[in-house]
Length: 244
Image (cartoon, rainbow, N blue to C red; front, top):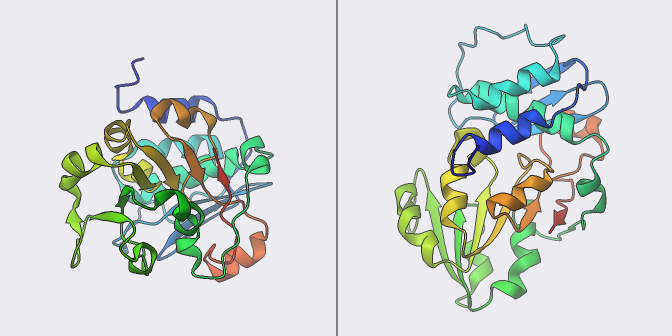
């Protein structure tokens, strides 16, 4: 199958999954969706708009992780988030990429730790970020030409259709892994072929084949305290490892 096929990345993710047992728990929070299997946890960003109507609510525990992972291809974003979380729960088990990653520990906000890590390489560069992260204005200080693309743009942001124009001239692109859930990843990655591409966030799968789609760095998470993650509902206290 040609890599230009937008479904190619999803087929690769699904075809490589092992049978990791049954789903023990699914939690859909305001920010993160969590799927727990027998020996691992997977995360994905929850949809921006919540719903009270989920026909499958309360029925997912006991189903196979591998079967629910197929939901990543759904256009229902709640299903797609569950599917991506299941993929990550399977991939997170004894993953060599995650084990060999360089941990990032930041004294500032965890959501900016990836940008702080790469900041020395971004000076004097044109940087495009897909999605606004709170506090990003403090990163540039006039030394980085930063363009923010946002689906719901605020002051100074560009709307997401501007990606067709902005990414082509970028030196670096920081791409939220939520784009795998909303299906914009294939197109955005193809636009960034001439830039250094960082796929980031707890939704990011530790998947080596991403290099074939132009991803230079994966900035994901490794869950080190599953109980804290489940209770707190946020990976902010966890390091975000980066691999090349």
